[in-house]
Image (cartoon, rainbow, N blue to C red; front, side, top):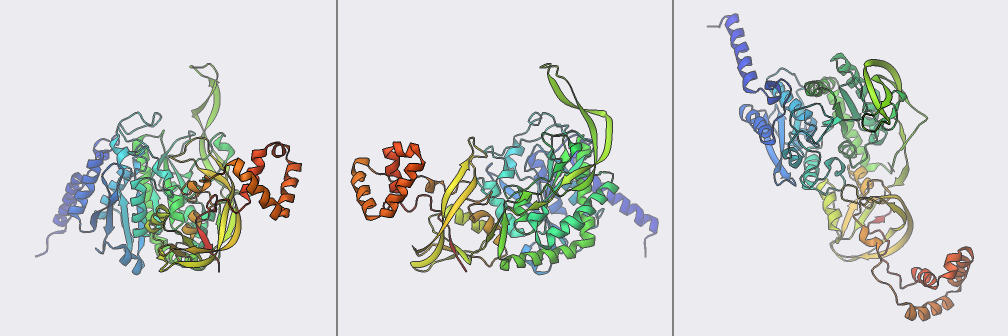
Length: 577
């Protein structure tokens, strides 16, 4: 016998009310004022995994805090296997939260979003698979208080930006100094998402917008996805968020100037999460809510953005899968790669910016002029957005790279990122291109545990070198070629060389005793009159060299057979086509 319709409706409404109460988040029960502790976050997702067969939680890798990373998987088809997802052309969405735990908006939005997907309040594409890291920076989340972000408007307590070792994890995606980053690289390579979202909260100028967005720089992303992002996806995201009453602007990168004068698109190089993801042909985004807005608005805008992405997936999800597949295949045969992109100030778009008038008034502390924004004077105007970058350095890929096995930190980093490596089976002499580091500048203060090199200049030479059994060959016929070029070409702004992986080659290990080398050097110059001529020419041009006997000996030593071959010789070698 069929139940009366009204009884069925009453049952459904009753179930919905019970479900909503059972799965209510701390954010909701506190009226949008609180965010849960780390253990409560994991506990909430565990309840969802226990109650819904579409959810599974896996632990993948360790963090500096001594606790493992959790990855929450959503799959209506119950596969929970990224390889199968890709084999069957599934769209993979990867959401990362709390890279900066003082910015917990994404945690609360993700909890409600996954719950509402499971309760069918949000309809998602049938082919969507989803992975969520609830809390990436566990150490920072455990360092809980209310004062670390002095200007932030809620929640009542939150975590700290630095991780357990005080690293900013959103600078660690290439160098991977932390256990967190090493684990993330493995997870990302396992998932190979077509879309990646890393949730944040912004500071800086005051304006009306609750949500701003960093879309990965489309010229750097390149390929079909880069064009689609610029011409189709970004316009859809902005249009749909405006319809949800959370009008967005690109991340307000207007430090040192007024936002109403316009700003440059943030250049997310590989050290940042979205820039790292783009190296693997992934559409990547950093939502940045505004820290001065009330916490409930910030979380709701992040939730609304998740809904907006789902709407875009409904329309273009299959197309994204095909474009990502095509771009990744194209990387295998691509001949040249662009690095170190440069802003093109000759091109800009116009965007609608809702701001507040700014001005100067005397400081109550110093009596000197200080900046302030007047919320009684809102305005809307079109501003210039400079969002085009051109190639800074274009390098032809080699047939392969060869790396001596002694440089195991480099090899391990490559392998975590899914790079296929092979080892020589016997000692072998190979004709290679050798880079010699000619010049570079180094920061005077440490940056995230490093003294980053910039302005790197190299000289190239050809040589037949003997490599040992067990040294590593990196064939350049891989989908990951873009990442390989970015990290192994020393002139790259986020290369392993720039991040100090090879600093030991920059210091000579052997010297000479001047009183002994004097005779050797004199004899060597007699045997090489061209070198003697060069020395005299240099002395004629350089008065300081002409006056300094020790400097002249060093000049000869640098150009002699006794100069150690390892000094300034970059230990990653190119096998050309």
